[in-house]
Image (cartoon, rainbow, N blue to C red):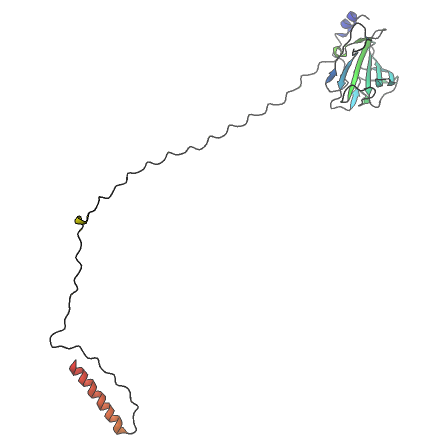
Length: 242
């Protein structure tokens, strides 16, 4: 089949195939006039991404399942329309030769094996057509992927709150100054003169009554009567002088 005929026959069914893994395309198809010249890439390398299994891109019969030098563990599926789909650098195989597989079914675990070209787990997908085994670009047979959803933009941080307004200072009230005071304007109050008090003429200071010491009474009624009379006389004399 020529390249032009292959393009016309596959254009309508290009959306029917499935991606063998969920990761990014690490290396694209690159082929010159000589498909076996060095520095060319006869397929695409797809990172496994979040999956741990490699899927069949198309339904068909397993034509080969085994080890290939430099390519590692390999599975080749022969599709009903004649496409030969090879998956290389696989992990442990889950299918055998002559086994039928469905599109999207698991055919191997994550690898890689053989001569590794990438630091992440990946699978190499190659597609050949016709009796001569012409290599074609697998991306022309796979459905386009949806554009990745960009992460939500981080919300802008809220604007800082304005500083509290400082109230204006209260106006200073005028202070009334006291008028100066001179000595001449101050009336000095005269000091009060004590009032002299004098006793009436001819009067003498009252004589304080004398207190007679108590004398132990002597024996006999006569002595006691004399003492009582003396005390009464002294008291009467003091009252007369007052």
